[in-house]
Length: 240
Length: 71
Image (tube, rainbow over all chains, first blue to last red; front, side):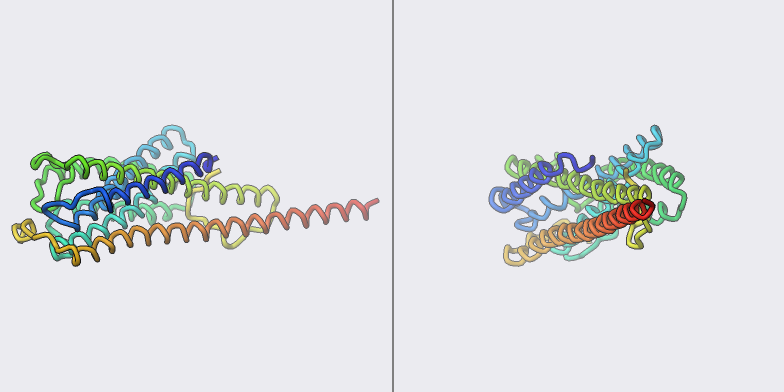
């Protein structure tokens, strides 16, 4: 029953997104240094934090899968990583737009924060071909879990390494050197972060519910001995 | 170049607006694409369910006819 509680969760997500975007538009003051462009950060940074935490969560689910052998945890891990990759695409695009507006360049190769995120993103982009190169379902799930744990452990290490790198020009949202964010900006940022986290959880639940429904249809088809439909997907882990 | 980037001045509001709008439009667009993909998946599941329902009904009908002819 993956769809349980999906409706209130969806309503809460829409309400939170509405509140967060209203705060960005009408409440958060203009940044003295960056001006209006800083409004992109209320989208870009929460997306990045949610994507990175999502990758780690995928690793935690993978540990649960290896410990219990329950295919349910493999599906959770797969969907978490899948959703974080989608969030990662949004992070890269919104970050590039901000870079173009602020620095005049779409991408800067000697900036550790940008390059490290790209490395993490590309690492997880290899998860799909790696996973589907293995035909046997059990082996596929086990190897994918090992990948998710290894890559998930790499994410916080990478994050700490970048923080220690003392980048010169990628702004630090929670930097303490210049006093950090003022109250109104911090409140807006936290609302945006909560909205993105809720959106991630809701979309993960949606994806799991769709996979579960698809799995139930396959089970029904097998039970009825019905001919297989050519349209059914074989690439994602089955959820029963 | 690093110093130059660090000291880049803020864009005026009319110029910055298109970048901010662009970033938020990208986010909404990605959400819409995702919802579109989910809608396609749901349509496929619904079609498969319909196929299975008609298959089950046909089988039941055949069984009923076989029962009648056996009597």
